[in-house]
Image 1: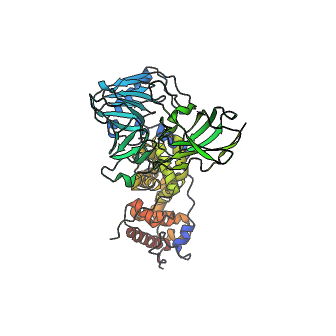
Image 2: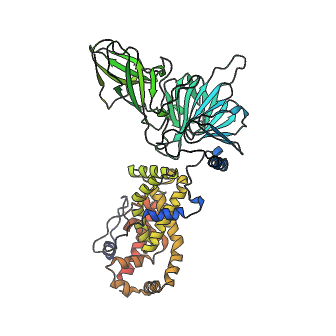
Image 3: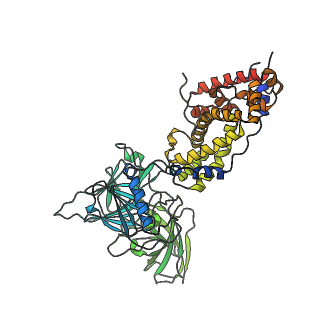
Amino acid sequence: MSAPQDDPSGPFAAPLDPADPLARALAALPPAPPPPPVALVWARIDAGAPADEPAGRPLPHLLRRRAAALTAAAAVLVAAGILVATRTDRPPAPREVRVVPVAGGARLVRGDAVLSFGAAREGDVVVAGDGATATVRLGERVTATLGRGAALALASEGEVRLEAGTASFEVGPSSAATASPAFRVLVDDRVVTDRGTRFVVARVPDPEAPWEAVLSVAVEEGVVEVDGVPVAAGTGWAGPSSGRGEALAARAAPLVPPLVSLELAAEARAGEPASVRLLVVNRSPYPVARPARDDVSAPMLLEVTDPEGVARTVRVTREVIVEGDGVEAPREGEPWLAPAVFPPPDGDPPARLLTARFASLFPARGTYRLRVLHATADGASADATPVLPALAVDVR
Amino acid sequence: MTPPPAPPAPDDDDRACAVLLARAAAGDRDAFEALYLRLAPAVMSFLFHLTGDRGLAEDVTQETFAKAWRAAGRYDPARGRVRTWLFQIAKNHAWNELPRWRRARASGLDAVEAEAAAEAAGPEDVASRAETGAALLAATESLSETLRAVFVLVRVEGRPYAEAAELLDVPLGTVKSRLAAAEAFLRERLKGPR
């Protein structure tokens, strides 16, 4: 007896003739038993050697070389009795400073450490531990603030390599006397060159292929260049962190603007200052540009439509943000930090509540309508609340 | 020679599995358990039909996922989907374990009887059980590993040709020719003496 011919072009094998003894035997096959309980797998894993721990994502090359040193650093931390928060939903730990020098050039930083990189050797790595961010002074001009778990390596003078995580950079002006070269951040194959003052660089897993890395740059003030491609304040750039020499413009993906919902913080009265709460939800795994200091490049705008139907926009700058849930308030001489818009380590979109205070939002009584817009790189604006109705406010 | 087929395009389930594995690579046990719930039944079914032995299939399923936990960070999505990656681990481990398992099974009384029955199962015995799945399972044990893997994947598990080719790292045409050979062999075994 011959079996029916399979369809050579079909993706599956053609069904067998029901009279075929093979077909009857296949139909009589006993069902597969269920898999063993997952607890048995855990028992097998937990009974294994330390090597049974997950291998983790492939570490960047510098970190890979220093894995042992980092492990030692962790051991030193434990020995010192330092509380290490292990869950992201816990309140922030006390703002203590711990800098642990470790043989091999790795330093594990916890809290608001201020570490001079001037004494560090080329190739040294600074890793921010759990909890608060770490601030690192890089010479006279550059302050880097590392997000949780970020790792920054000193590549050479005026040049660092972001090995992992998110770091915010503030670059001071170069004096005419020193004529310092441009500050550069290396991320895999990419080079981010400072042409301004404030920007955020992140090396995060690619959401589509978590084993690949994405470079994300959000510029708050000034201009930076990503492999020579200028990125202006209030905008960002995201794309593969690898691929030296490939055309960036073709591969770059625009940053996804955050979703913002609005509510009034207090009853609105005509002619009085008004406080508005903005719930900012980062829909992308990338950092998004934060409200800018100046009034020109701020990416976030509040559109106010008065009772007559006339709309105007007010920029949401850092100066109008008076408080924020989970947001570090700006301190004298330090950059304003909004970890709310940093990429989440656990993959959940972060949402942060900011309160903005405007001196004159509602000049007269009546019903106003508010919505948030996002300025785009070309000067246009896009609705930041596409799925939400505009907030109606009755002003007395 | 037929060129190797392009791997099937990942669907939403594949992407979800990739994300779960990525999280597992970062030490997320909940994600790993979610991945287990998704794919362990398929892995277990494949192994059960590949080895014909529930105990071995359970053992290899456990070891497959234990290996996946250890190697999650080294998984390369460019080389195939998570399901295929797990099946490859399972298949390779099963091939390694099968001879030892058979020897161990043969050392026990029941196993001796079972093994003896399998060894002694001539065409008459097989023919008498031709309508049963047990007979088919016994007959597949006589197949070579390469033919058995194709038969189980394509005919028993109902996987597409391309997936079997990807998993076994052979061209599509080889999968089809091996399937035809396996089916011809099994028909003969099930038919008994003429």
